[in-house]
Image 1 (cartoon, one colour):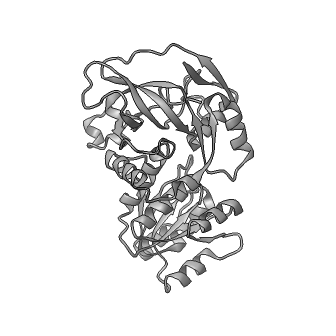
Image 2: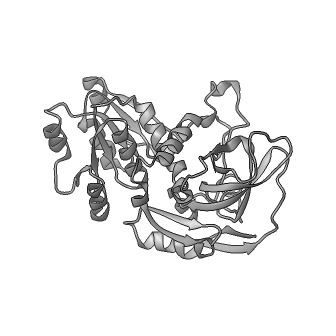
Image 3: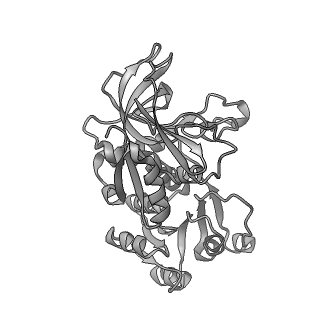
Length: 338
């Protein structure tokens, strides 16, 4: 079978490797599609070389069908359509307080162990979520990032009719906006990229570019002065950290979706003055995956408009190079069987 391997220095190799039988408690998946995540791009840029053991097959946003089943696995049959929730939480300890998705010993499959950018993939059966038999496998590759958005919105406590501001209209920001709107939120997106602004508007969102419009004034005008009930910080830069406390209204909830690699100055006075809450949100839990699957299978979200392009697995090198050259893109998929 064909597999891709990240070898360092912005290089991927496409290699022929044996197709291995699944071990005890494992299944072998015939991978249909694998999406390229922002984390995968960080790996490509060498930002995670201290963590990634090269050469490594990366990738974790995927869809596929079960091709073979190892001993000790029940509840699945060959041909089942599935996605993988790529968290190896077997190292959970009492100190993790039952939250295995953020356990101290958590391993992320596709980063800490081989991932989905290959034609066949052996994974522990406990990571699987079954899909309806008629699921669009191309869109199913978006379930993992969509589950991130479902987790973010669930932790926000959003209720219908509340005002929402999403700071950052990239792939995750757009998914957060879609899920928040589906949950009944009145959503405004703040984004500076003109192409992404047009995409968001085509999806029916109110969009503000902070480069030419005062975001706080705009949100105040849209909310009769009440500002945002919920703010999602998705961009991960200092200007959005600065504005998140300004655009949040009284007792607003701010959800920290972005990963900040270093400490940031935060206006703590605003937390005191408006009784704000800051909520951390990391990856997902099983119920978020099930919600994402229901949204995909129900066709309730215009997810097809977020797919920028689909390329053969063997084009992996050019795919990553093109992502660097095209900052306007949203979600790129690899067709692992092409």
